[in-house]
Image 1 (cartoon, one colour):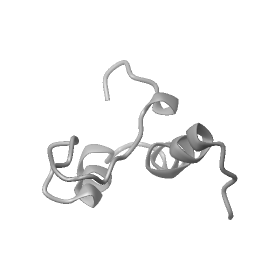
Image 2 (tube, one colour):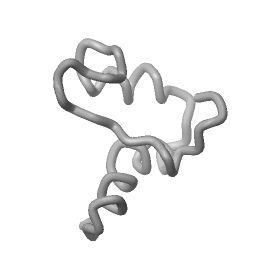
Image 3 (cartoon, one colour):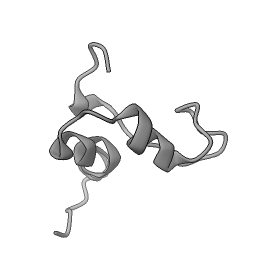
Length: 58
């Protein structure tokens, strides 16, 4: 992932996908492979909730 911190990344789902993959889930399964589960959850969910001021249900 280079030097970008996981608390600064968001997973998008608009077409065309900015992540450069066929399906948004490919970004999680391919690009984020090797990251810890909490880091993947932060990128794919928690960062957007925080940005929007929403509370996550667990």
